[in-house]
Image (cartoon, rainbow, N blue to C red; front, side):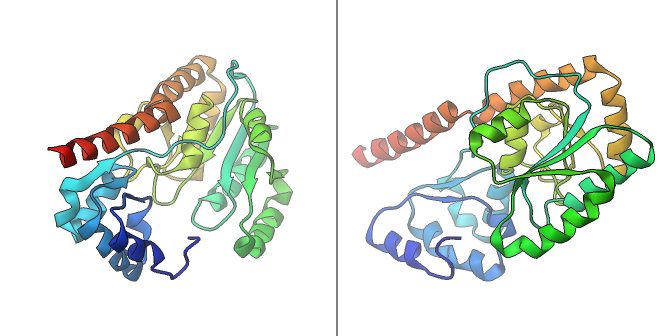
Length: 269
């Protein structure tokens, strides 16, 4: 996003052999997708974050398939090595406060919780991008009747501590949970049992690590069952931690090193 409408990176790739990482190709505007054409022609390797993103690119530019390497992104929050509080009656959202993140569903879940006279803590942890300040203000006002607590612009250390308080996470992504969701990876790495949404881009190996709900009502019913079962919450917590090993920074670094060694070997041969 820092390059705006500039084609500077594409021009750089004409001057030097460049490896490019395409984070969210599937969500790009058609013109933005088209602008990535030079990379698919000139880059010795193209890094993408998931099989879904790879399929999205190769449907449009099939000649790039052999040079694509899938390397996941990781969590930017360093989480403490401490035992999660399983019994906490708390539901949290973590991520950017902006449209298309499912926050309206979080507010609807909050309403259901209060209508059913449950005194669970409801907390939104995140940051408001300047362009979405009006949206965030409206959302915060809609959550006032339900006692939603908003914790904004905290340091990574503070976020780590807040997530380690336990309870459940509710991340109702409209387009589904996927490997490109940094906020999801953070809650999983925290061992936080997470309720989210499932679509065609949700990887099959994620299914055992989270709980899925189609809408806020289903999420409420599921949360109620989980709150009543420490054993089930503990199982989800362990599964989340196990799954998060797939995108540890050590593993991500190793994948990059292997890719560069592969390129170097190819050039020598």
